[in-house]
Length: 516
Ligand SMILES: C[S@@+](CC[C@H](N)C(=O)[O-])C[C@H]1O[C@@H](n2cnc3c(N)ncnc32)[C@H](O)[C@@H]1O
Image (tube, rainbow, N blue to C red; front, side, top):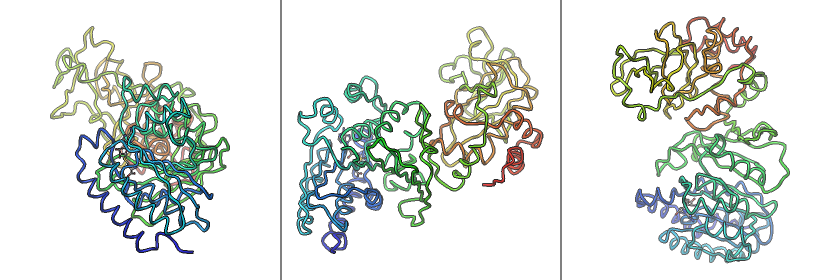
């Protein structure tokens, strides 16, 4: 059988498309790129995505919403054409709102159709210069109004990534269709799921942010009630998938099928970048990726060996924060709002203000000079609600820099070292407390060591792909029991700075035959 992608004409066509993609990418101005979320998929990623489809048949319909210059559709058409039994007919529907892109897309599809014809495949295509959100929400409301096809065998997409404001047209149209999202890419995915046939397949490359966190909760519940996850691929290096475009989001590719039958397991794979030939692949039980009774439907992306081991170990953790009688909250002092009350240096009427830069080697160190940040906040009636009793707490950074090794960075706030009656925690920190008051010191020491362990970091990464640590994410973790936390505290002693000692204490206390 002749493979389409081994023909010289096809190779030239795809090489030219890739050159065009680079040219278009580098010519895009920042405004249009931001407004339309224009990051074009490199051919290596497009081929990889197309290879995930299992769809078979004589007549296959495909949808490419936000098609750019067509890289994804072309990769999928090649994939279908290379099948042992290729389809006789492919019907492609491509939406692209950018006029210039749509013109290039039209040309690409025309050439593609004539190449397909040489291989006995009738490619029918429609390039629709329309807003996909508008067309698809209308089609969902009135299936026979306007949209040429409302039931596809497959959707391939790299949707635009952009916030949708609450009062925007896009948000209103989506809401009328029952879709509640605050990012365009989730809106595209939710609509794509609706436009698939039963057992139809979807492959998408998106930011990893939809997997967890409260903002995407409604989306996850909507999407995963229709779609079953079959595969997730993670690019470990943030910038590599869209290297030419300086994308710093952590991206993943996933394959999902429109069915209520969940597979037993999900294939998870990872590679450093699209150019990394060494894929690490494993199967994870479906219930470990989306827990069956989880109302938030968080997607746990277990992306490497460390994550896999951490997931096994996490099964043994017994306590929730409630069991430990702990709560986690976000620091109350939003510095730009509290500006009139902030002071560069401590004064008679001030108390300490704790920022992330005060966290050092497992402890809160105050005062600590900073060229741009205040050190203290006034203690007066108007600031009373911003301050909490100066007792023992565990504080965790809400944001870590992308090049930082760890996501979870915790420290013990010990009032014995920071003398004052009340204290302010700045909003870039989360803190663990007991109903608004402090924790017993040994428990806080054990919890700080646990959160700073290599294990907890790997466990947290299974849950969250961003550098942001939401209080909500910390509430979702399982923790060692109180007794185990006290054993950790005992083993680690006063020194919270020694990573090896922290890891050893956690491993021994949890009785883990485990090391990452
Ligand atoms: C992230 S790019 C991906 C392009 C292409 N799918 C690829 O992978 O190379 C998203 C594309 O969606 C287009 N787009 C943005 N908003 C759109 C909308 N509301 N309807 C249709 N296309 C849209 C942009 O112009 C851009 O070409």
